[in-house]
Length: 292
Image 1 (cartoon, rainbow, N blue to C red):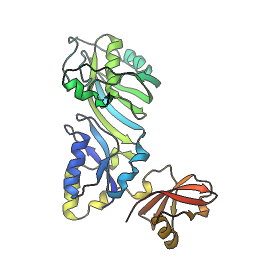
Image 2: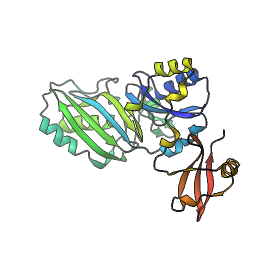
Image 3: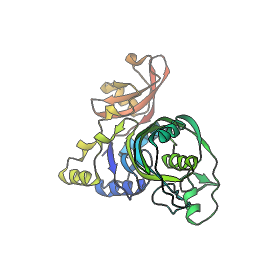
Image 4: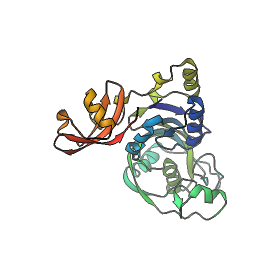
């Protein structure tokens, strides 16, 4: 069983928890995910199964889209609703124009401090492991890119937003920093990821739906069609002869792909057999071969 399925992660599970559940449901060991999602967050978690786990390298820096709510009035040590208070609770009455003006400061390439409860490593140890032991966590600011950050609505103490960000951006840190700049503290009250790269929430399935499909023997119908994967790479269909060469790791001529530096090679319409790199002219060498 080889494929990619977009799951709608429920709250309360880590991304690794979801991977373990999929392993049990499918009865398959080779399962991974394409981008960690915080336990309290919900939404798009692409899962790779079987030999397609090797595609993970193409999604290491994928763009992500989120919707969520920031609550103003106090900050927490985790920068979200699961943490302990770190500032006194204040009575807040937000002005929509003030919040939107503040949000505008977070557009583009900015310096961001990762949360102390994060997977960022300090001397090889994830920061959250040190924070849980009440050990000092000293992180350095990192450069991130926020491509869109729109305030959709505000109430007295909450702001609903939509954000589109480059890989490595912490929405929790955005919420925390907004609270600091307003002088009232803030944290991320809820977060839902609506897209990762080409994978959207409209195409997502729940864990119970995956389990039901497995019981009915139709689980592969939930998989994303292979030709939709890594859309930046053009697709080419190999002949039986060239497919045999590619499967054995040998270079082949793909005359129709003379301008492409890298291509997805298929045998038939639905079997992805390799990612191949152009080495000269129309000669391509398989960089990754997906065994049958």
